[in-house]
Image 1 (cartoon, one colour):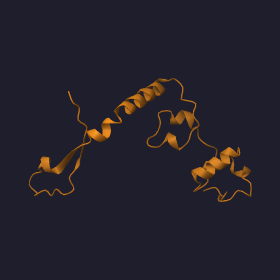
Image 2 (cartoon, rainbow, N blue to C red):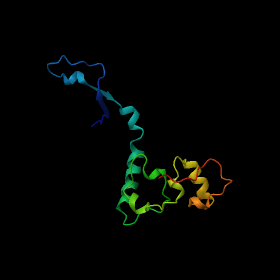
Image 3 (cartoon, one colour):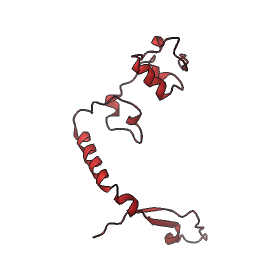
Image 4 (cartoon, rainbow, N blue to C red):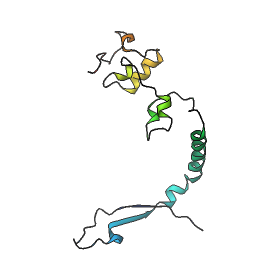
Length: 127
């Protein structure tokens, strides 16, 4: 049996006559089998690994970062990401991920420990 992968979306060109929707015109179904078939084995392998991780009693030993919430929030987020103290560098308004990485690589996690020579960060805490 051949499996066909399809994507269904609204037809932006369809205009209802105000009486009754014509569902066969309201939606567009596009065959994406060629685009998705090449990824099928890789996705199955990734899902198998993810299920193994989710079945663990303890979270994986990975340093928390932006990957914890992008593209979705990890099941272990609250276990790995304990609330930060008020003077943690991540609480600085507008600080970039790059600047946070620079500070972390220097072992700096408190605002009071940021040297005056560190460029591009305002050390004023938000109200």
